[in-house]
Length: 396
View 1: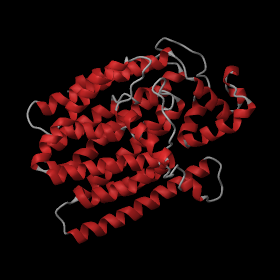
View 2: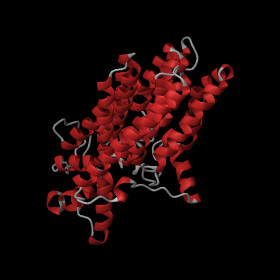
View 3: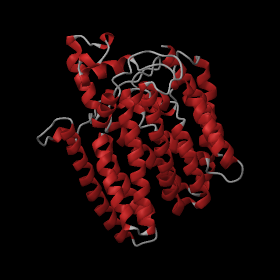
View 4: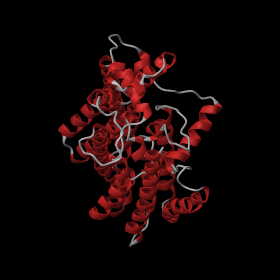
């Protein structure tokens, strides 16, 4: 199983080991470091300087740190060069993604164990880890300088959830304290961290110690919500301080696009489709969407059969998935992602954890060989899509 995981990961990510940074990365370098640190071709016109500064501020302090560590990444190179700053940046993002996958495996397993049993929870955890790491959006989203922030947030948020559930279920206070510290760091990394308090409060109520009285679970869930929310807010204030803000501003805490206009809803539905099945139309023909869609439906089919025996459980899981996507979508950038280039794929990196987890839980719902085979088939399909998207981006 581990060997297949490694082979799929290498197959999906290998194209991103070639070439330098992208045009948007050069603009971010110019905006973050000044024109003297970026190549002459990267200098943006004066009319676009404000736009570039806004883009850099949206990256977060940890992406800015990555930019300052990569000033020599301007030369294009089509060979695999481990000494290349661009390759080192992508390898660093890949390592963070692997950490996120491992931690998310632990979090999913502990969340589902009291509801679905040890076998299903363990299989769903491994499948979620695999599908997250080979998700078609990840190689493209984490290839640029704007991918460091999402990669780091995924690692910190997954570790926070895993540490919290482990501490609560084993009654080890230091792990719960560690999860609060990780929530602070996640808050400093991304505004999507505001989803963490609600998520941890939900798993505290439903999964940490399920058989306690409802009043006790509700009380500890509210305490969890308040403590983690305070930790995330503190992290957001620290993020503003690292970016040069010396006074408390509410927009630093609540930064995001929370509009309720119809165009925002339509764009969110479009982004959900790209997060579930991101296909670069410049590389894949239009007819390929049919077999790819069928593969996803086959992965979701076991959940329909399992829902016959536990309809309430699967209804709640579907509701949690929908709320999770909407929360991550509303707390992130609403930048439109075009199927022809996937240039804004980094804005979908965090959201991609929702469809990956949904497919993992659904594809492992049945017992027997299907519990092992279906996630591997889905992983192969996603790895093919990942490689195609990566090749298309490198050829652009």
